[in-house]
Image 1: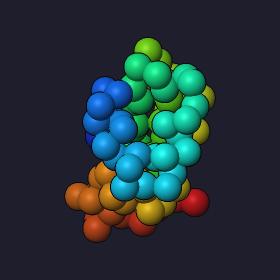
Image 2: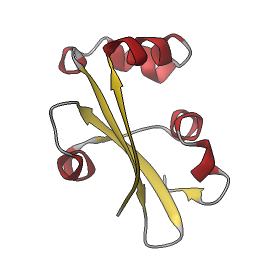
Image 3: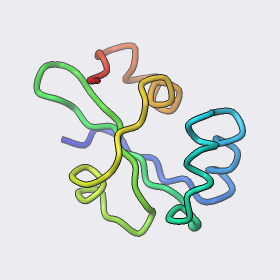
Image 4: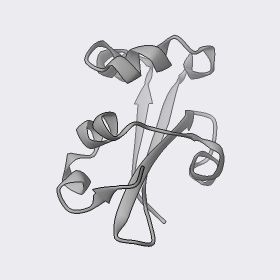
Length: 89
């Protein structure tokens, strides 16, 4: 179940990438040339995880096929969730 979504255009994505090692790595990947879609997804055990994919993917596809964001990067992007639930590794 999606609980939050961020859509970063390329300018916002570049800004995030400058402050995040994981973001800097992702920025070098060609599939994110237009931007990135990042979802926070609620788990079944009072936990959550964040997944990312290309901007042209719909939310459901990002949740199913996207890559999982590392815990530290996810907590920086979704701090309001990080304090309430544990991150699913």
